[in-house]
Each structure stands twice: as structure tokens, then as C-alpha cells.
Length: 117
Image 1 (cartoon, helix red, strand yellow):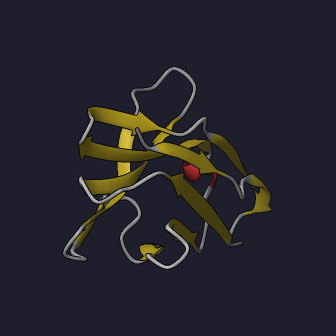
Image 2 (tube, one colour):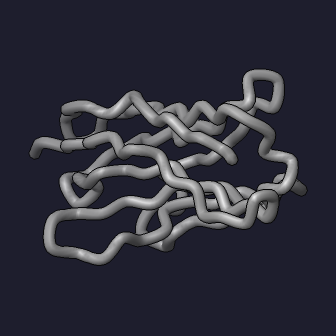
């Protein structure tokens, strides 16, 4: 079972930057997809960025060009680098791993990102 812990959230001004790390414990070998989701109050949780075991990435249209997902296999950590932040980016951000052994969608506890205007 994979456990995920994300951090790095906080209050940032419009146009500022944040880097969110997601530290994984346990083996992520069976996790074919890892990514970041966010959920604003009263809204559905949505995918922000994802990365496959092969290194391919995908992004929500609203964040393309501003947000980069990456991973450090040595540290077993995934990162979400967010630049040029906008108030619309305000949400709780969740780290996610879809794994097959054991078969489970693993979620972190969430970290709050607030972008002030």
C-alpha cells in the first residue's frame, strides 16, 4: 500500500510561484499513473497534471504553460511546480497515485493553495 504526503501549500500573490512535493512511502512500482488534483469549494475535484511511468505528462488546459509536473525516483517524490499563479488556482491540491498492487487509488491528505489578488 502506497502512502502519499503532500506539502508546500500556502498563501501566494498573483503571479507568484509554489512548489508542491508529494512524498511516497512504499513501492510505487505498480503505480502506472501519478498526478495532482485540485478541488475548490463547491466544485468537483479535477486533474491538474499527471505523469506516467514512461515520463509522459498531461495538463489541464487551464494550467498549461504555468505548471510543471516532475518526479525524482531517488527520493520517491513527485513535484508540482506552479508559476504565474492566478486566484483561480486557489484550491486544495491532492497528490494521487493509481496503483495495481495492491489495486487502489491512493490519495494524500491535501494541501491548501491560496492565491491572493
